[in-house]
Amino acid sequence: MTGTAVAVLCALAAAALIAVGSVAQQSSAAAVPDTDSLVGSLLRSPRWWAGILGDGGSYVLQVIALVFGSVLLVQPLLVASLLFALPLAATTGRRVTRTTWLLAGALCAALAIFLLVGNPTEGTGDAAAVRWALPLGAVLAGTAAVVVVALLSPRLRALSFGIAAGILYGVTSAFTKHVTDLAEDGIGPLLASWQTWTLVAAGAAAIYLQQRAFQAGSLTASLPALTVGEPLAAIVLGMTVLGEHLRTDGPGRILVGAAVVVMLVTTVALSRAQAADTPAEAAATPAPAPPPETPRRR
Image (cartoon, rainbow, N blue to C red):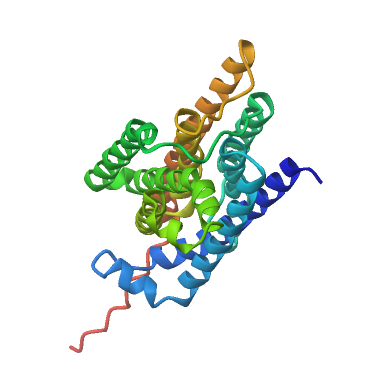
């Protein structure tokens, strides 16, 4: 089995674990009222911890995949977690409409085009800090802007927090290969590296924002944004910092660009469709009958 095949299989297995973990975490976070402490409530939830274990297993598989493949190869494959998560969400009683399935299918088709036409190559995981400064600063500034939108707009909260969490997960993915290489040199170089602590900080912030997204809306309102935000951020950093690139030009480059646009459009459409479904479902739920009147004594 070639290294590319190992990377693909590990990335797809990681996507399946992301789906399982996301469903468990979303059901736990959605049950926490806005008036309660989100972090405190989740730490007391066994289901949430099970979801975190799923995410942990997914990250281990991503590390293995990145040993054999590039960030540009591994990260887009994680979008497949959306197709794994939708059937799981349906088992929890959440209705998954035909429109949702069509949009998810278009999203994954765009992903396949990106991988097959773009044919991404590997770069170097060890980039100087000066090369990280501008691209990483721009990505973090974009994350902060999306968080502000989430705080100001309740309707866009699940979508925006999902995008912000996805971007930060993409940052951790971009640092993972280099940090993994440092671990082979011993604990000293690992702890002395600024990349290690950037990865830890980005990962912790991503987990928190992910729970805020899950609390604010259903899985189909937040997971598509989170799922697409991660590879897009990783792609930006992989191409601008790590020296990775797509082996295509001319018409192929246009097709890859169109695929990225489709990924973004379908992500937003999935969240909008979910937001539109929620009031309808609430309206369809029959109101409880009023209690019978007690006959008054004459």
